[in-house]
Image (tube, rainbow, N blue to C red):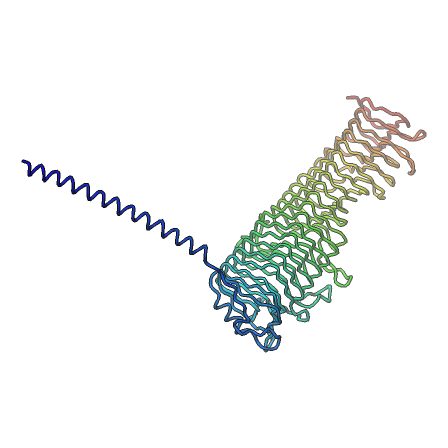
Amino acid sequence: MSNLLIFKKGKIYLLLINISLLALTLNSCNISTSEKSKRSTEEITSKKYQTLNVKNFEAKGDGIVDDTKPIQAAINAAKNGDTVLIPEGHFKVQTLILKSDISIKGVGLLKQYLAADTQNYSRRIQNSSTPLFFGRNLKNVSLNFRAETRNEALYISKSNHIKISYTNIKGNAKKIKSFPALLFYECNSIQIDHSNVSGYGSPRLSAKTYQAGTAIRLLSCTNITIEGNKLQYNGENGIFMHGSSSALINNNLISHNGMSAIQIGFGKTKKERDFIISNNILEHNAADAIDINNKITPAPLVIDCFIKNNKSFHNGFVNGESTVDGSGLATLVNVSGVTITDNESNKSNRPALYLDNCGDIIAKHNKSDNKVEIVNGFNKITLQENVFDAITILAHVKGKSLHAIGNEMRTLLLPNSISIDSLVLQENKLMNASLNINMQGNLLMNKNIINSNAPSGAILLVNINSAQLDQNQIKSTRFYAITIRKMAKKVNLRHNVIQSVDACIYDEGAENLTLFRNKLHSISGGKLNRTFISKNPNHLKMKQNEHVGGKSDNSIRFEGTGIAFLSKEKIISGYPDYGKVVIKKF
């Protein structure tokens, strides 16, 4: 029995020993893991990224010897996180192949030479075989360099996280068909900042033709930042994007280029969206300040684009001659979801804002000495608190909604045979208006200040489904302020203050024309001093209007025959002449 007890105690004793050994083993493992983690952290912290000076690889930098091989050797020797340094000097090179996870820092000048410079840019061949820097399938590459190149300064494709900063590059300014300076194809996360790019392509000599040569060209790229650069004196565009998305273009000077400062083209993938174009100076470019042109989709493509706080000056000229382009703020073709705000444009050749077959467009707080031009069709255009010369709608335009609110402009030009479901003009100031309203659709004019020295007067209502003019101040110094043709339908004038020579309103017999509480004041300068003339009134309704006509002329004059309903008209001066028209009260 005791042996058994001893055996049990021994068993328990042995078990306790095994537990203690297990605890010691676990504690030892924990210490080992902690020490390994500490050592790993220390190794990462203590790792020193190297700077590889290309002169240590036998680069001469004398501008005579070809330094391509030694510089390439330095690039090849660089490990992850290392920097290849190009020190003071002139380094004669051909093409350098980049690798991932390195930086290039150039103090000296890279000067590209080619044994045979026979390649030219074309639509079929959009990149050369000999750029200064070339890379494919790269990641985490940073470049800061100075260069003069014969072809591209950089061509990178299918790569991620590429950064170009404080770089100065010049191209061949004598070449007619130049490749771009910086070319990217199918890249993600590109940053180009505080760099100068010039001389890629010869200066444009003709207003009728242009040649290749773009500062920054991005094809099928995404997540792009272009900021704080000077892109000047290139043959074609400052920035060209095609089939690209998610781009910030901010605080750049883009000037004296042979086509548009910024151009966005569209591919078949329909990925073009999310653009911010802001705080740029766009001047002396031979075409548009900003050109966004979708020729791919049948209907306007929503692109979520913001164009804000840019300054544009003198675009659309070559040696003083006008080109076919040259919008001051933007040319938008077949796009939707664009907001243009707080921009300024002066002395550009073409309209400040050109809208062709667009969807939803908002323009707010812009200032320009040129006009807005609307072509073909639109869904909803909102123009709010802008200063423009005019708003012009071309013939045969079909649109759903045009709202102009709080703008200052000379006039609004509306040709015949247009269709706008809802045209709203509210709180605008028109300095010398001559509005021809002859369209299918509905018109609302509210709280506008309209002055006119035009021989046709301020407003001509020819054909309209309905028109309501409410609380406007209208003054015409050469002809009737408002002429209403017989075809105009459902015209209602309420609470307007109208001053005019000859007559404030001339009605040609529009059916159910209604005037309520308007102040009509005939002013000197015309042959007549009348407030209201109606020829063959067709169920005309007038109530509580105030008339100040000439003392020796009719205030209200009816001609021909018809029916008019009058109630509480207040005639301060002048006298009414109702002729043969039947007058009824209501």
